[in-house]
Image (cartoon, rainbow, N blue to C red; front, side):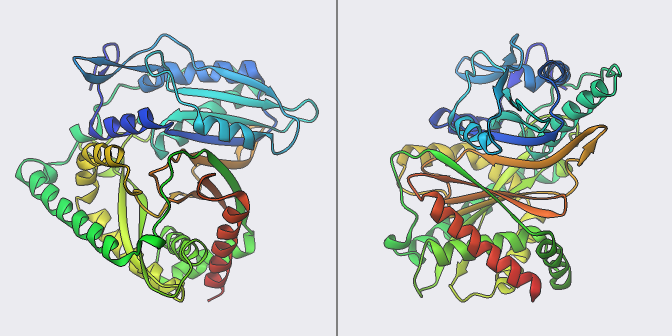
Length: 435
């Protein structure tokens, strides 16, 4: 384990994320609608305890001989208190947080906001992380710890302090023996060649007029929707019947909707889709779920999509492709290639990274109740920028619904077009669930 007092250098993927964050804000924003909203003092105390437990939540980033390091920060996690004037106030706060970077030299790389209701008890807690320090598992752990401590305070109890976690090495220092030595280099060559072939296929198969636009600027906007409980239940049943994961079905619906609504025409197009692989279970030693860090890989898959492609056909192809990718060493190779890839993309700015991206959070990640505190809604967003995918979304099952949080750039589309894409996704998912 690494000495938390002295910090450690950033790993390969963490440096790629830092490079992205230096070009444009690269944040993850989580929103919890709570009933009742804990008091600002209770939230401040919970944030202090969580920060004391996790080294990366009290880290800054400095450079030592040109190498970026996670270094200790003495600054507490800031909590901004706002007055909640309407049910939708939090949406404006999310858009602001997605576009606002961090003072990395000062730290920490997490800040919080709460929207306090002048009447009633329902309010929102927003947590904004820079992506260099967290993954989906980490976000869930931090949320659970904060709500657990706030629930104890609400019940009149003194929360118990949990043991501090160690500062773990980056993912590329925890590769299993099966992806070390010559196997690592063989995997890099194989994955590198595969990416070149996929990129050439996209270049050949996608006319310039039908490629996603490349703009010089763009501000992130958000759009939040959900699928009715009955349609959600039918979709889950249909996925089991067709033996595909819900994540594959959602990816297929996303690609089809983008193909139909943003790239109209009868010709078949190759679309590039990003998904996110949790690497923790394959690392050695395996980071615990309660350890905060960035232990995931961004994977890109490509599929030929026509307007009349059947959803289950595309979902099946994606399911097989994603399963092969997940079982191979592609995630490790992608992580090692990430820094060079981002250098090239940011340096050239000639094309976008992909067409669509979807992150699916496993069900039950956040409990609906923590003692007297009820979680009414959970939302999640990740910053996008001008060379990122044209359409990105975060999806999760919560309280019987499929929740869908879209991030789009105002240079790509307006809210009406984003809702049009969602309605097409909703139509596909509803028909798919009924099939």
